[in-house]
Image (cartoon, helix red, strand yellow):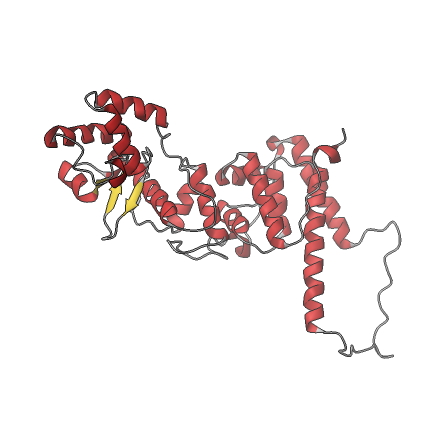
Length: 339
């Protein structure tokens, strides 16, 4: 089977589809934004994590050199790189043609050259590459050389292009509940990569807010539920939260801690949090509730523990046992479906 059959060339009709394909390349690589940045640097490219995040969060056509840097970091073959670049140039040409048609609609007179105008440039001779084609060939050969030689002979990255290095270019300075779009989609992908499952749908709803709060608490950041550059940088660093207990382990521990009513303990915890140890809820009055048994900020303060402790399923279950022992049952928790 030839390479084309194994790795079909990318197909996209719009800039948004092209960026979506690039996101798939990044996702399949299994690399964090920081790892991609390091690999791109080793390959002689300049691709800060913030620039990568901005590129993959947009629906506009990215810069060619940024595409090359991402593909080189992800180990894309030279033949595939050429296909990516040619597709990007085709999309760019189509966009330019649409702009030209809008500027000169049908029926608009186009100024004809006069005798004083210089003669039009002669078409390039067959076999002679124009500057654009020569640059593409050199770029592809450069990527091929990196893939062959490896990082040991890598060039040092050059200076930063200010237009490429802006961490907020194309995205709001702060992401918060109620927003939607590719910037939110990128945030959700980073949360998932950081160990916090959340629907990757581009909508900043209550689920995303809860996951952001859990990440902020576990990473020692101010817990606001909003995402600024500091949160994005931490997510770009490849920071991961401790692995969450699976439901089976949670159920086993609940039954051990509540031998008098194991089924009731599992039922109440499932009703409150879905047996999700990193569940954070914001209730109507703005108060927050944490973990399996949804202890409030006020309860945590009374118990003298911090929020990361509340997200520890072992502590949360033992604290619930203490409440159960004092009150003689599960009436402390208001969860109608558990009754």
